Image 1 (cartoon, rainbow, N blue to C red):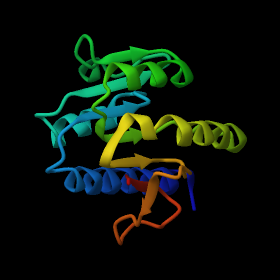
Image 2: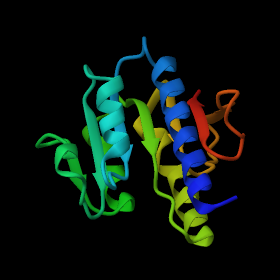
Image 3: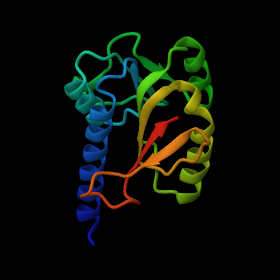
Length: 162
C-alpha cells in the first residue's frame, strides 16, 4: 500500500471513529478535549459536529491553520504530562469526549505516550464518556468499543469509561 493510500485510510478511520464517538455522547453533558492540535483539522471537525460544546485543546507547540485556532482560554500549551493532571483539577466534572491524535513515526515513543495516556485520561473523562485515539490505550476503567464496521480494528481505537 502506498503512503498516500495509508494516510487516506487513517483519515477515514479517524473521521468515522470521531463521528461514532460524537453519536455515543449525544445525551452526555461535558467538555470535549482534543489532544494534539496539529494543523487543526480534527479540531475543526469537532467544532462542526459539536457546535454547542466547549472544546479544550492541548498542544505542546501550536501551529494550526489560521482558521483553526481555538478561542482564547480553550488552548492549553505544554507537554501532556504536565497539562493533563492540571486539567483534571481545573475541570473536575470531566469530559464527555476525548480525542487523542498524538502518534509520531516512532513506534517506541508512541507506546510510551500511549502507556502514560492510559494513566492520565481516566480522571479527565466522566463515566460513560468516550475516547477516540490513534493509539491503543490500556486502563482499567476504559473499555474497548469496536470501531465502525468499515474500519479495521487496529487502525483507530474507541473506548468508553466505565
